Length: 231
Length: 134
Image 1 (cartoon, helix red, strand yellow):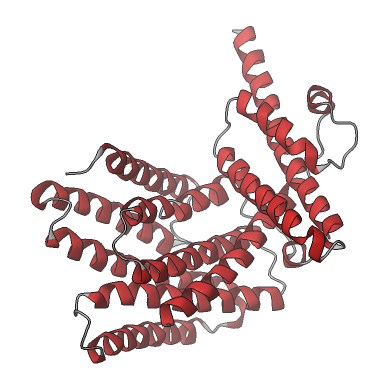
Image 2 (tube, chains in turn red, blue):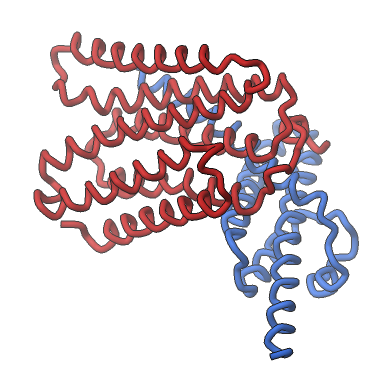
């Protein structure tokens, strides 16, 4: 069963995700940013699923362990779809959407393959370690892809504030997650992680809720003002 | 080894993304002109604020009820402000020229928080006027 702190965190995460979902629907962002809505739905489904597994099998069970890591991997893949969506918005005027989708799927498959290979060749590791390694590598590829997107936005002088904030908040989240997963791989047996990961997962829904409620769709901000000091 | 490498690179990109994200939030506020009422209540005399005023403005914000999701903005700006304070302490002996830039950034943080406070005051005044008219 969940202890009171875990339960409070679980409830807070669920409420934040639902709040963000409602904000996106109220601002009619589902057609333009469908992948964001899809990701939030996947997060809510995962939270409800994990709660029911904890209730039936317990927090320390293998079933929950497998469910947690595999659902996190699936959520990371959903995050790739969000990233692809952001790429297609940035490059919308160039008509290169198909190439971006193909490239992202190729990278995704490659990362999963390499992660599996790295775990399979090390005989001293369990195959179940694959999921933890996969999470770390998927998030790291996410960091590289977001960084490239941010670089392209700076080069193209992208000035849509909403898009700018969505990409930057995504960058914060994938960097934080990649670093945390790497630390988790180095120091796995620490109770700190069971509180830390759910708390950090609130960042994206909160930042999306803020962006869609406070930043008007037509708002513009020069990328240079974000990059260069005091302009 | 791979985990260590990923941790170091991710920490650096996290810092860069977070600074840029905070700056994008602060830049939004620069276009907003503070009302005379807000300046009077907060004791603000000029359009540019000093970083020292951040703490007092933050205390005033805590007294004013939240409007929408602006609490998230205040928290992000506060983290950025404290990060700048830490960098200022570390860099003051290594790179003294950076301190003027850091102080300007901290002033930007204070201004962004003042804008949030201004909006909250305006909203609360409107609510009170609405209640009085009923």
